[in-house]
Image (cartoon, rainbow, N blue to C red):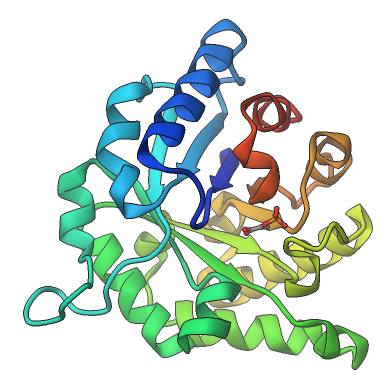
Length: 253
Ligand code: PEP
């Protein structure tokens, strides 16, 4: 059975000291009131925080993700951080293809595919982000856009590989804007994504793939969104920077 996932994306926020405090607060809250057995909590932290956060939290309660990795295995790529380095620092997963990386750093589906491949090769889970911008939704082209992103980035992987891939549908117009997709809009797209996976990889792969919604998820709307049959949790930005808010979201299944 597929897992429910509450994944925080801290983006470029917090110093190491603040991160340590925040992770410790969340850990204490989860320790007092934990999620159900079928729910996984992941923190997507900056590279510099992976080792410290890894020491602060109980790894049975919280998994750790990076927010990116290099598209090369190793070598003369000054400033880059490889998937192998992330694994050795204690990472369990890598968030890949976030719309901010696509928009500001020119990441294409082809680059994202390479990064997913390196992530899986290093025994980590890939959290693959997809989603349309506002103009594409207004032109009612959102299904085609998301389908193309999934085809381009994921269709060369095997059914076995898909066991290590989580999909996060994040309509770009809902990220950091306070504008959430309605629970119905989320379900409509998540159902479509699952169908797309079923056509390519078979129903079993589709049924076992966790599909998260991202875009202004908060304690106030998480329950309604997560209740939809094809929504298996959330990728959470702003609300993950507060331990109480994120804890409430973790309990919203
Ligand atoms: C995100 O960073 O992926 C995100 C969805 O951010 P927010 O929850 O702040 O909209």
